[in-house]
Length: 238
Length: 238
Image (cartoon, rainbow over all chains, first blue to last red; front, side, top):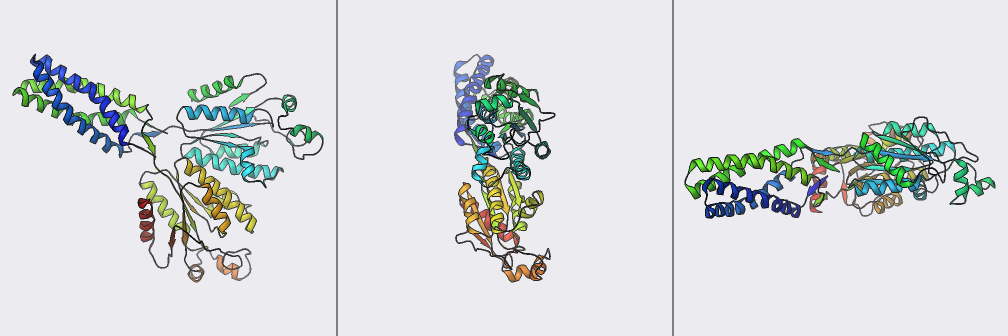
C-alpha cells in the first residue's frame, strides 16, 4: 500500500494554488474592474487555501476509495538452455520497472542456487516448477509483475502454473536446438554430449513444445528489442 | 502499483470545490460588500475550477513522486501443533486487511496440501521452511505483509528466513505441550503417542525454543484479542 508524503502534498498544493489564485483574481477583476480588490481577494484567498488544500490532501491520503491496482501479469519464459530466456526476461523486467511497476524476476539458475538440492528428474523438475509457480502467483495476486525464466520442459507443470495465476503469459522461446548448441554459453551442451550431464533437456531429456503459448520468440530471427516491443504490445492490447 | 480512478478524482474535486468556492465568495463579499458580485465571482470560479481541479488531479495521478510504500513485515508464528499459531495468524491477517494493507497468509497445513509430498524429516522440514521463507521474503520486499504459521521447529531454518526478510517478527506461540496435547484438535497427539505418526514435534521429534523471539504468546494465558493487540502495539512502536 502506498501513502503520500507531506512533501508531495506541499508540491501539489503549490502547483494548484498558482493557477487557482490567478483565476480567482482575474474573475474578481472582471467583475469589479478594480485591481486593488482583485489583488486583495487573491492574496487572502491564497493564504487561506494554501492551508486548506494541504489539509484536504492529507485527509484524502487516508481514503482508499478509488485507488485501483494495476493489473499485474506473470510472464513465463520457457525454452531450451541457451535459447535466450534469461536475457529476454531481464530486459522485460527492466522495462516494467521503468514504467514504475512492481516487478520480480525469478530465474531458474538463481532459484536453484538458493535451493541447491533441487534435482533434474521429471518429478523433481515438476515439483520445482510448481513451487516457483506458486510463488509467482502469490506475487501476481498482490499486484507484482513477474518475469520468470525456467526451461520448464513439461507441459503439465506449465499448465499447473497457468491455472494458479490470474494473467499467465506463456512465452515460448523457440530458438532451435542447433542454435542453442552452437551458442553453448555455459558449455553445458558439450558436457551433455560427452555424457557428463544426465537429464539435459534437448539432449537426453525431453522438451514438450507449448501448444498454445501467448507469444513465440525465436532469438536467432529477432533482436531482443523487437521481442520486448512485441511483448509490451501484447500487454497494451489486453 | 495503484492508479486513481476517474470517480475518485470527481469526488475529490467536489469535496474541495464545496469549501473553496464558499471561501472565495465570502472573501469577495467582505471586500466589496456586494452579494451579487460575490455570487457571480463564486459561480464562475466554481465552473472554471471544477474542470481545472479534475484535470490537475488526473495529471498528478501520473506523478509517482512522493508516493511511499508502507513498510511491510513478515509475522512468523512458530510453536507446537495445536499451540494456536493458525488461529492467531488468521486473526492478525484479518486485522491487517482491515487496515487496508496487502496481506498474504501462509499456513503450514495449506501449503503442504498444495505440495503433498513434503516430508517431515529434519532435512525435508528445513527445505520446506526455507522455500516458504523465500516466498514470504519476496512478498515482503514488494510491500505485502505476511502472516506465516508453521511449526518450524528448527532454529537454523527460522534464522535462515529471518536473514532473507527485511522486517522479520518471530512470534513464539509458547503454549505448553500439556495444553496442546489436551486440546488435540486434529487428534494427532493421540496418534503420535500410539506410535502411528513418526517425526511428530514434541512427541518423537524435537522443538527448538526460539532464543530471541520478538513476541512470546501463551494462548492458555491470554485471549486472542489480547495477543493481537500486543502484536499491533509492537508494529506501532516500530
